[in-house]
Amino acid sequence: MEKQATRLTNIAQVVSKCTNPAILSVITLLLMVFTKSTSVRESINWYAIILLFFVFIPAVYILLRTSGDRKRIKTMVELSKFLKQHPVDILGMALLLGIPCLLILWYIKAPPVLIATIAALLAGSIVTSLFNLFYKVSFHMTGFTILIIMIAREWGQPFLFLLLLIPLISWAKFYIHDHTIPQLISGILVAVAVSLGILQLNFLR
Image 1 (cartoon, rainbow, N blue to C red):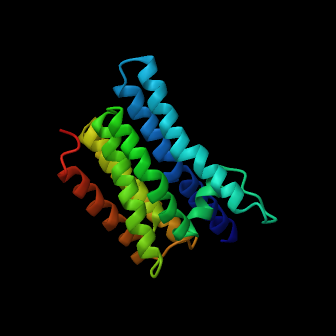
Image 2: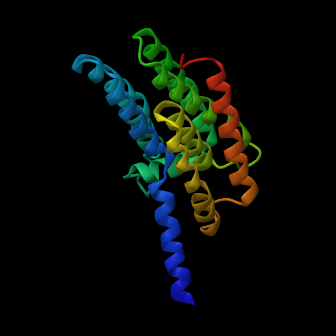
């Protein structure tokens, strides 16, 4: 019985780590660049902006932010875990990094799907951060659900099969006591509302 519980805990932790939206969002955005760019120079510009605003600057900020802590952050998983525990930091970075990133991509005429996806992720981060100031809402479910909706919108409805992962992820986050059921459902609802709102702005036309 104890071995089974340990096995389930390990499975839940693997599911949680493998579906980390902080990592998957970067991968998704880079794939969108790959499928939409028409020249090497164009690709390099878009890749550089995404990596700068979504990886490099946040990583440097967190390293400086935790420089006095005994336990140093060494991986993207640890970085995203730290941020989830500090919604004010997420809110600040969303406003100070997300908005300039969007404006730069819009100025250099990046693909509409790239701008729309970043806008949805940005809006989801802001709304979830605000909720987390007084009630814990799952950043994990918000980010993952937004990615599924935007991927399906761009690459076709067959990708909606990824929605089947939501119950699995919800179970994993609940099993390892990261979230309660209402917190997970709240994250999904925020993601759906934000994604539909962004799509209604006709970014992708």
